[in-house]
Length: 607
Image 1 (cartoon, rainbow, N blue to C red):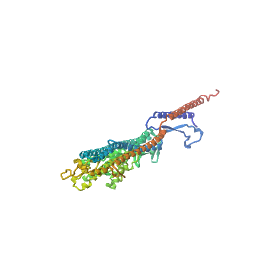
Image 2: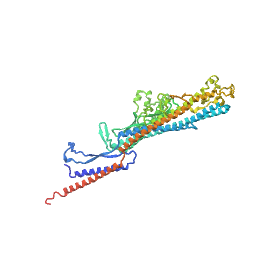
Image 3: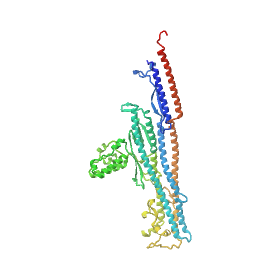
Image 4: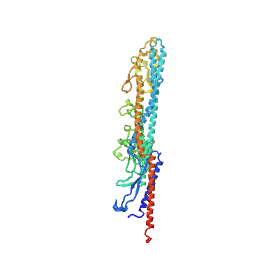
C-alpha cells in the first residue's frame, strides 16, 4: 500500500518537471537567434506501476505514480539534414564554376570590344592589307601600318592569355585556401567526437551491451551535437559528405566511399599541383590520407636514428618527411619515402618504410608489421562530386575538347587557354602558308614569315608569339618576299603587284581547324565562337545555381521549421507549463488539506 505522503511526492516530481519545462522553453527562446541551434524538448513519460518481482502491475494500490523526465532531446530531421547538405554541395559546386566563368567572360568582353577588342583589332589588320589595292599608295607606309596592326593583334592575344593566367592563379589560391579550411574542420570534428563520447559517459546516458556499451543517442550533450552539425553543414559546402551517428554517440563522416572522421581519428586532405598528365600547366589533384588521431599523427613521424644522423643528407630528407607526414602532404611524403629508401640502401643505412603506398618495394613481412596509422593515398579527383572543391577543380583542370583520356573535359580555364593558343598557332600557320612555295625554293636564311614564336618556331605558346624577324627587317617583304644575296629587295615595287596581298586577304575569309575544336571557323568566326561558348557555359551554370538555390532554400526552410525556435510555439509551451505548474500547486494544496484533516481532525473520541 502507498504511504500517506505518496501523492505529495508525486506532485513534487510534477512541480520539478513543470519547472524544467519552463527552463527548457526559456533556453529555446534565449537561443532563438543562435546560429546552428536546434530546438530542445523535455521528454516526459508516465511512471510505470511496478512492484518488485511482480514487474508491471495493474493493482490500484501502487497506481498513479505520476510522470518522469526521460531526458532533454533536440528536434532534428536526419533526412532534411542530408538534403540540405547535398543541395549545399551542389550549389557551391556550380557557384565556384560560375565565379570563374564570370571572370573569363569579363575578359572576353574586353577581347570582343568594338573599338579595342580582338575582333576590332583583327579587322584593322585586314583593312590595312586592303589598302594596298589603292592606286599610287605608298607601300612602305602601308606595310608599316600593317605591321603595327599585326603587333596590336599579338598584344591583345597576349593580354588575354595573361589575364586568363591571373584567373588560373586566383583559382589555385582558392583551392589551397579551401583545402586548408577542410583540414581545420576535420580536426575540429574529431575533437568534438571525443568530447561527445566522453560526455555521454559522464552524463550516464549509456547502457551496457555484450560488446561494451551504447549511448542513448537521442539525448546527451546537445550543444556539442549542434557544434558538430554546424561544422558538417560548412564542410558540405566544400565536398559532398555523408554523416552517420554511431552507437557510442559519435559521428562518422564520409566523402564518397572515403572515411574522413571516425571517433577521434580524422584524415588529412592534400592538394597536389602536378604535370603528370603532360599538360601545359599544372593540374590539381586531391589526395586523402588514412584515419589517425592527433596522437597517432605524432607517431607517424620517423625516428632519426644515430645511423641516419651520421648522414646529413639522409637526416634532412627524413626531417622533411616528418614535416610532410604531420602536414598531411600524402603524395609528397610517399614520393620522398621512396627516395629515402633508395638513398638509405645506397648508404647501407637500416631504414624501414611505413607507408602502405610502398608495398611494391616491401616484403610481405614488412607489410604485415605496418602500424595501423600508416598513411595511404585513398582518393583522387576522379571521384569528386559536389562541393566547391569539385567546382574549383573542374574550373581549374577543365580542358574541354582539348582533353585527352583521363583528363577533365569541362570547359574550364585550360580550355580557354587552349582556345587562344589554338588561335595564335592557327594564325601563324595560315598566314605563313601563303609564302610556302617561295620558302621551299630558297635557302633557310632567305625564308620569309609574317608571324613566328621565339626562337623562330612556327608553333608555341602565346607568350612567345611575335612578328617574324624577317618581316621586321624589311616591312615591304609582305608584298613580295624576294631578296638578293645581300638581303636587299629583289623586286620592282613601283609596280602594283598584289599577288601576295590578295593571298593574305584570302586568309581572312578562309575557314580553318583550330586545335581540337569540332568545326572549322574563320578567324573572326572563331573569336565569336569562344565568346558564345563561355556565355553559354555561364548561362547554364547560372541556371543550375538558381534552380539548386531554390531547392536548397526550400529544404532549409523545412529544416528550420523542424529545428528552429518558433516564438509562437514556445509561447504556447510557456503557458502550458505555467498552467501545469499552477494546477500541481493547487493539487498540493488539496492534498495538504486532506492530510491536515487526517492528521489533526481524526482519532479524537467524543469530539
